[in-house]
Image (cartoon, rainbow, N blue to C red; front, side):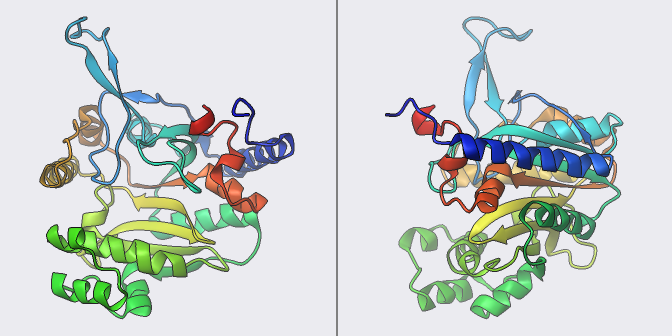
Length: 325
């Protein structure tokens, strides 16, 4: 029967307790809960993210024949940064997010995201706070912290910041992971991301949460460039027991650089035969007005609950996954 929920009553109560625990965590730190729209007139330009689109006929410049496209948020990021630019202090949100992608053991196109922003924090301050939250909810061992460059050196014996296209192809061949479509793209950054996903991710964060930080600049269009190494951006991710849990940034505050990065994303989309996406002009205007120095992070609530309850399928921590929605 497909009308029934996939989330048991017992686990629904445990899920509610974890959400309460998270809200208490932020209340103790005086981080304020906010709410922002799920619909937006702009969206992400990321090559690897696709937003759901709908049509709306009632904007000022809309008509029945010329409706406007609206996008369901892939995360509440742009709206939350607009709040910070409007003068808000440290904030968090537990929100629904939507991504036009396949569903599976760890994925559902509609999911719950925790996102928060800390004014005056750098990426290391925020990683420490994320580790505290994970310790609060999950207990267990303390987290590990490893740079993107070091994890490549340890795992596949190649420096991702200096390796050329041919050297990365050799890594793929060594591990029998090469494919014609990868080579044909002639994109070294695509090879880096493929190697990271296929060869490195399965080996990290097995017994304790592991943070990977300082990603290549091409993989962090919303993060500030490192002052120590201009080849990398102050972006981090966290993995635990085979699950990607967290994606965070020391936030880029320069509106002009952000515009350029969005345009570069769209150029990549066009080169790969994907449709380009409208840049969120309200977000760019907010950056021009002034975003305070801050760091922000997104955490997958459903995946966190999977780990807390030792559950292997995301559908079992959601009331109605897409097949039963």
